[in-house]
Image (cartoon, rainbow, N blue to C red; front, side, top):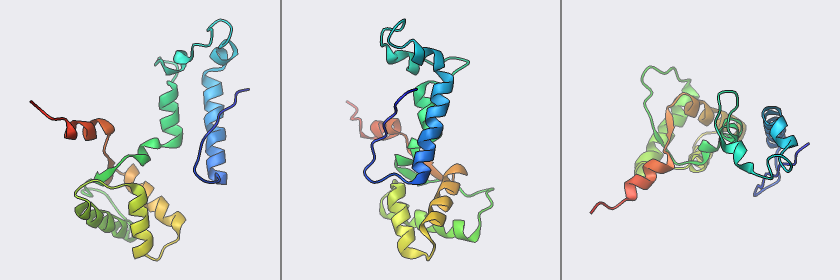
Length: 156
């Protein structure tokens, strides 16, 4: 049995607790042997969890797959070409497009969410689902930290 701590700025929802439980199950399943031998044979070396192998994901990949942390990155507008969007998704896309113009490119999903709450009469869960759908369909694109860093590098 392992103990995993998730530090949040507010009380976790039932959904968050279920995701954490799911993460624990995946992590324990993939690293059962390493966890059992962590303080004996492995002498407390946690780098074993960061190594990539053909049979196991490393812990960063598991975290990304389960918690979708890329959703905390800034986002930009992608293309809707060839994508079938519902009328509600189209409204969300238009708000995202407007936000993109006012922020000169990148914006947080939290800011987009708040803009949509102020603009459209939908419940918050549905808004979150619509945004997530647009992210999954690559209509809203995450801007990686590497790309953001390169933007600010000064060339001599």
